Length: 386
Length: 145
Ligand SMILES: Cc1cc2nc3c(=O)[nH]c(=O)nc-3n(C[C@H](O)[C@H](O)[C@H](O)COP(=O)(O)O)c2cc1C
Ligand code: SF4
Ligand code: FES
Image (cartoon, rainbow over all chains, first blue to last red; front, side, top):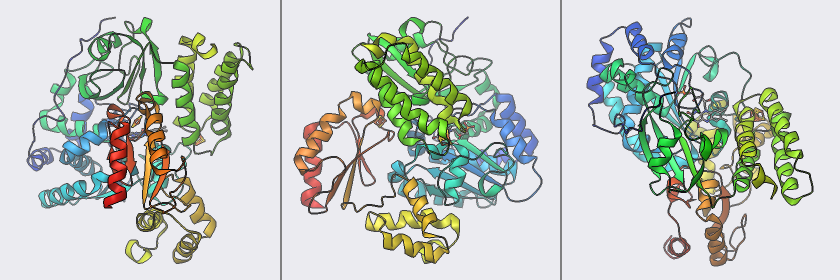
């Protein structure tokens, strides 16, 4: 396999563009042309699941006429992710503009930004920027954006839970199908995209699909904003070309003593040093919504796993048994092994339990516990026992 | 509140958030009143409120301190920060000071992992905390706010 070298990109934060001018230019194209540009660019969702953005917009646009909505998912709750905050802080008008392009294409008159409660301090500034934006696009598009606050629940970042929450209910995920493109917020066709996805969509409108497509690999086009934390001398937010190996990443961000990197947050995968070389960061390898946590050899991976499991146990909505009970069992289980109350072989039973959770849970939360559980237990088994 | 936000189900969260902003928590009286105004059952309103960490149904101090307990902040020493606050305010995690000014809680990752340990006091985020720094911040609230 060949890897891309680590390359810093400056698409998102760079250049304060005149957004309304770009919108005006974009709106001279037909909706089909815009969708084709997004499809052509290869842009995939930056919120985790990596669904092709152009397709999502296309499916929603194709729904029979009636109300429809565009929603910007700014719930950013995945441990280790903080790039959406920075994007909303530094270039909010690009986020609004991405929503406006989507609104035009799918025929939405209303858009919402679901902002996590922890980011309420951004609200005054965002409201101000939004006022300016509404004035600027007044003659271009009949479209209004409303900011809706979350109230401290990781699960509300899951799209259907987010709709429930916006409808004033408990944030409990729905069964799928129907998908949001058919029945989302208020059961109307809805595009829900991550903050970063919307900005990239707008940048693709600005520069054309080629500039984006030239970056990255065939499965992971473009660049992405990474949130780097943990044992690194240069923690922070970095826009990087997709498709680099974890080896290159660690060379740049590690502290010289890196033993593992958790890619994709608590819901993601733990990669140990010996696999850095063969791990590609992107949809063909280990995908990430942006969270990169670096651990050096002083860290106990037992503590890391325990911390993640506590996180999941607390944030599970409790709606389905495999997830609710499974999270508790996994915590108790690793505690028992650590204390010597259970034999080491019990870990294999726990791995099976996490696999069952993957199959039997209703939503991505319960389904992804096994990612970190298996990858940590598999690679750091001794640390779980002694 | 219902007058301000409207009486539809989808306004429920706005209303509850508005009350918490003013009163710091949702009392039984407040919840029952909201239920009546929106023509929902008290159980529905209560069930919704208790789902959300920030919609407290227990009395809280004027300033709610939430220290991040997730892994990056944990690695950077959040326990020392909590200890320092506990000592300074003479409360334990989960408790409110006698003068009802501060409540000390833990919370999950709040999006400042690169600048941990981090905490929120109401809506305001504080990062790169040290024991000295956190005491200074708390003292400032105690004296000036
Ligand atoms: C438990 C859970 C939490 C999620 N949290 C977020 C989040 O905070 N932000 C986000 O954009 N997507 C989150 N997602 C993914 C969303 O469900 C959805 O796929 C995403 O918003 C789609 O946008 P995209 O196509 O632009 O990535 C979460 C998913 C799950 C299962
Ligand atoms: S998997 Fe967990 S979070 Fe998802 S619906 Fe089931 S209980 Fe809720
Ligand atoms: S781990 Fe503390 S803010 Fe993310």
